[in-house]
Image (cartoon, rainbow, N blue to C red):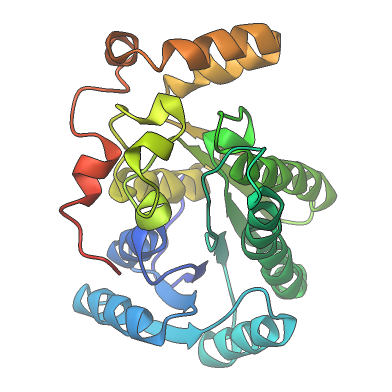
Length: 287
């Protein structure tokens, strides 16, 4: 399937930094018209400038996706400016590290659920009537490898990412036949600010020496998923082995997760070989 994004309208949440920013720039290079949403007006202004420098148009709408009123205003602004929405990328969200036994665990789940899942639901429900009226549209939901296999100390995030998987699978079946496509992206550890505040010793054990994906790699996968109508994308490809092992048996999944804590195994699987997460983001400005 070949799809041109020239003059297509792409709405991206969490667009002020990290993966969201990279996705915005990737679509801008394809000639898309961008609607950028995030809580930070300053961050959005910076990304909007980058989009315009690439020759594309952009509309920035500071938005808290957990507010139904703010989300309604976002979608109304997008349609008022461009007349339609062709692609929705649900990228806004947070993640926290901590043991299940920690006093903060329940609150971590609640905060992550509100931002990463209920925010996604709010935006999707607001955009779907536009897609229904058009008879077309593409939805990309950003999950994580944790949405199929949880790691120790990342349970609160994994719970929510599993929820994103279930929501996406259900949604895909509900909109089938209506010209609306749903893709889910499952990146492994990525070099963004998501875990910047976590100390290296607190990181999920398999992450400690893993070389993270770049936001650019994830953004390219998002564009390709929409272009090719892919329902599910796992990054990197070798992470599929972990998910296959988990699907066959939790014991196998746990053994693979434990094996990834050993640097030589991670290197053999091409998931380690460069800078670690903290070494990588140390050179990134705080956004």
